[in-house]
Length: 297
Image 1 (cartoon, rainbow, N blue to C red):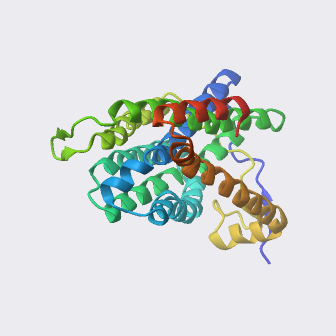
Image 2: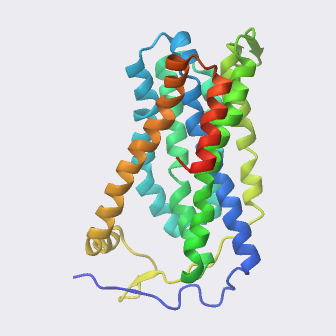
Image 3: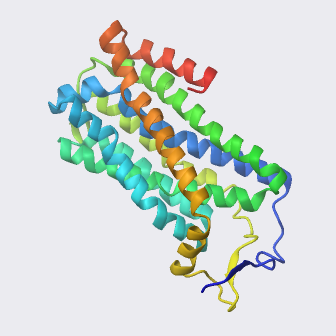
C-alpha cells in the first residue's frame, strides 16, 4: 500500500510572494483566462459566415464548436496538469497561450472544414494547460483564508472574456462583414470575416511577455512519499485521486453540466437571435455581452 503525506519542508527557504505580488499575479492570470474565452467563443458569432464559406450544416458546425475543441481540451488537461506539477508553471502557461493564439490566427487560413477542425483542436490543446497551472500557482501564492477570493478574481476572467468576445467580437465581425477579400502574405486572399481570427490571435502572442512580469511562486504542501522520493509517481498520484474519489467525481460531474449549459449558450444563442429576431451580429454581440457581464449568465 502506498502511503503519502504532505511534506511540510516543501518550499522551505523560498520567500512567499508579497500580498501585492500575489494579487498582481491573480489579475494577470485572470486576463489570461479572459483571453482564452475570447478565442474559444468568437466562433459562435461567425456561424453564418463559416457555414456559407465552407458549405457545412448546423451539425458539422456544432461539432466544430464543441467536439473539436472539447475533446482535446479534456484529453490534454490531465497530462498538462501532470507537467504543471513538476515544471515552471508560469512558463507552461506562456507556452500554452502562444500555442492557442497561434492556432486561433491559423483558423483564418483554413480552406476546408477539416483544416479548420484541426486548428480548433490546436486551440483546445493550448487552452488545456491554463487551469492546472493557474490553480497551482494561486494555491501557492495565497493562504487558505485568501484563496477563495483569489480564485474568484481568476474566475472573473470567464465573465470578462465572454462579454468581450460578444461585445468586441460582435462589433468587429459586423465591421468586416461585406468587405472585399483581403490579400495577405503567405495566406493569400482571405474572406473578410477570416480577419477576425487574425485580429484576435496575433495580440495573444504578446501575452507571454505579460507573464514574464510575475514570478513562479515557491511550492508548498507538496505531497511526498514516505520513502523520501522527490516526486509522486503516476501510480501514487492515481492512488491519491482514488482516496478522494467522491470529491473528484462530484466536482467533475458538476462541471460537465456547467460546461454543457455554458458552451451550448455561447455556441448557438447568437445564431438564434440572428435567425429568429433578425438582429445583425453587432447588435447580437452587444446585447448578449451586456447580459453576460451584468448577470453572469
